[in-house]
Amino acid sequence: MSQRGDWRRHRFDDGVRVRDAGATVPRALGFLRPYLGLVVLILLCLIGSAALVAIPPLLIRELIDEAIPHGDRGFLNLLVLSMIGIYVGNGLIGVFQNYLNTSVSQRIMFDIRNQLYDQVQGLSLRFFTASHTGEIMSRLTEDVSGIQNVVAGSLISIANNIFILVITLAVIFLLDWRLALLSVMLLPLFILPTRLVGRVRRRLRRETHQERARMNTIMQETLNISGYLLMKLYNREKFEAARLRESNRKVMDLEIHSALVGRWFFMLMGLFSLVGPALIYWWGGHQVISQSLTIGTVIAFVAYLTRLYGPASSLATVYVDVQAALALFERIFDYLDTEPEVVEPPDGVELSQAKGQLQFENVSFEYVRSRRALDKVSFTVEPGQMAALVGPSGAGKTTITYLLPRFYDPTEGTVRLDGHDLRRLSLDSLRSQMGIVTQETFLFNATIRENLLYARPDSTEGEVVQACKAAQLHEFIESLDDRYDTLVGERGYRLSGGEKQRLSIARVMLKDPVVFILDEATSHLDSLSESLIQAAFEPLFRNRTSLVIAHRLSTVLRSDVILVMDRGHLVEQGTHRELLAARGLYSRVYEEQFRPQEEEAERVRTSRTDSAQAL
Ligand code: ATP
Image (cartoon, rainbow, N blue to C red):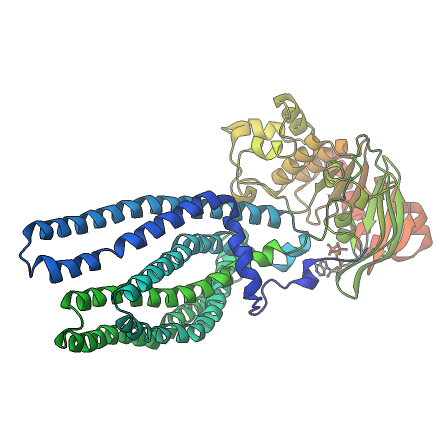
């Protein structure tokens, strides 16, 4: 099967990639679809408000041309009261519309965040090894909040300004078409420069986002426990601080640059909007002198001009904001369009009672194109057998264990469980058969019980205790003040290495998988912890198929078959005796890695016997 991974189609922290805005806009608007009813209500509010605010200049005209010259106090009072009524009505519509905006924009944000989390959660391991956590977090938090601002701010503003513009244009042309033409002649001056500024701002906004994500990554990597320890231990505080400062400076420079990009543009806009009224007073004034226009009409016109140029310049700046918003949507669509490499098969086979036979059939695998981490590997592990993977560093042992739960699919060849190609099994049914204990135990910052129940939330208290007893952990837990309700700390830092590992063993025991995969720790703990861990593993090896990346002599000795890997090839397989006799790679690994352990064990045994005899 060919790789369909995102690593070929997408790069995640690459340079600026601008999509076709024509496709992004309708897709972005698609997020509004479920809320069309509310959107229509918002539009009605906007139209109502735009129509209302078009009335006061007409009232001013009546006031100047009719009420005041004719000394009509009643009409004057009515005009002013109407004006106040219109402003109050408009304010009330604004409050209601604000409520609607917020609820639509928050719902859209809710939808996008959920959609993004589901999508990213469904992506393959390759995505996570290729991206930075900081960058992922930044897209899921900052970008999504940015979109809320776009919906509640920019979109509403566009619609509002369009309505005001259209209604104002209609009214001024009805009032006096010559003055209206004069006012409109200045409009292109507001519209044309916006495209240019928009393009530059869009690029800058995208670069700023990327740099900010980079900065988040530095913070996340150095301000978590593992990164912190590493930084302190290697005296890299100054280096990290400098790295952060550099990224922080870039963010600052980019922000300043984007803020300044439009400064001439905004200055010119301001100027244009002042020139308009002056022209109206000049031309209108002449008309009033020659008695072809009333003073009220000229004043009303100037009032309308603010409703014409205000929205026109806002529309121009909103256009700039929309360009920036497109960059946000593009980043989100980048993630939404990333195809998961490992996909759920349609009508996947459900394995209810797996036996646990594992088969690799000519399996090759590439992390990076044309570099084989596994090359035509074939072997079978029968149900209940224990296979030990042995070989030098980088030989492909971990990669073999990654293919079993389908963290990756093979580039060529087939991996089978009970004769079924793994790609034909439903992912749930496949993964429920697999239990994995890795060298590094991951625990959530929750209680011991919660971490254990992660494996099987419906386990009874009795089952939890039984698993912990089998994992040689129960006594230790009972000695803690809060027992099973003790918090384990960030990544389990409040527990020792051995305790953490025994907790992960108990967790797998609760899951009770058919296939058990173990990446044995390379580092040796003290002999008490070591023997506790070995005892904890015992029940896991019984009655199930196990595949162990072996670093202990005791493990290879008790395994049914040893698979010897070298640079992606399975070079030998057999039992300890057979392989020693073959005098191949295994016998060399044995001499270098296992023999010293044997001698050490012998030395400890002898010294114990000596001290016993001395007593
Ligand atoms: P070790 O005993 O040191 O853990 P291993 O036998 O488990 O080694 P693997 O982790 O399976 O070796 O790696 C096999 C090869 O694949 C190595 O050359 C390694 O550099 C490469 N490799 C592993 N993970 C990736 C990755 N995510 N991207 C690219 N190459 C990788």
